[in-house]
Amino acid sequence: MPELPEVETVRRELEPWLTGRTILKAERVDAPEGSKYSGLELASGQTIKTVNRRGKFLLLPLSHGDELIIHLGMTGVISPKDPGKHVRVKLSLSEGENPFLFFQDTRRFGRFLLVKAGNYSDLPTLFSMGPEPLSDDFNPGQFKAALQKSAMPIKPYLLSQKPVSGVGNIYADEALWASKVHPLTPAKKVAKRQIPLLVQMIKDVLAASIEAQGTTLNDYRTVNGEVGAYINELKAYGHKEEPCPRCGTAISKIVVAGRGTHFCPKCQKQSS
Ligand SMILES: [Zn+2]
Image (cartoon, rainbow, N blue to C red; front, side, top):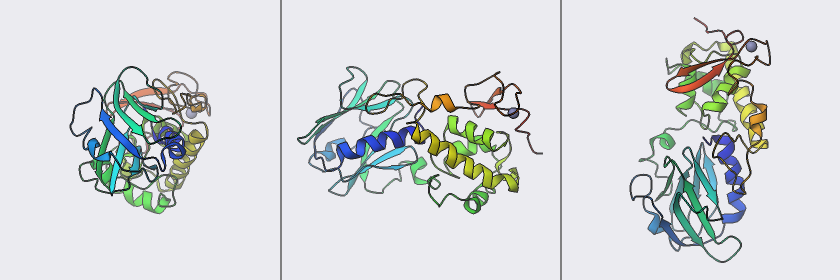
């Protein structure tokens, strides 16, 4: 599932391709009009001003005051080449290199819709999202205040996007392992001394993964069709029963709030 590093990798490829291009036609292909795909007909004739990202959402402000919002969901891939199947949206662009954009989404968890710029009231995750993890707005003071608001275990609280945006299943496990925080620790019980370290590890893990163009487990591809290389750097995620790189204890896998969760039972002690 694409997380922040994967979406940022895609954003960096889309920006030079799409900025300044006019959308001649936006069509839904094998995708029903509805909350996931709405308003696309209004994109015709508008020029893409830039390609931004907020958490795992791609935000494309348009010339007439609208904004295209793209979420890759679990299997979304954006490509200039027609993938032939599972295409949900096709954009025809003004003259230039790669005049078509295809949004392919096999499992249909993705979204591709148009809203008035900045109007995210129908997108609750985007609407109530915490600060960008690589910005200075995400810092130990802010994070400590956010953690104190919840008794939810730290892992699903990170996934809620509320204390900080863009952290998904893989990077939550990696950052918790790196900072020695047990994934079931209630958010408000994370030790004070661990908070600055957890902030730093979230930033470090995400930044290193962006450098590697993200992590490819299954479907994720960059716009150029490449796979993300960060999979080779994962310490805990996907390493069930393999030795912890720090202490040699076998990595455990449990299910937390429905998500597979990897941790070292020796390094990541649950504080009581
Ligand atoms: Zn360990």
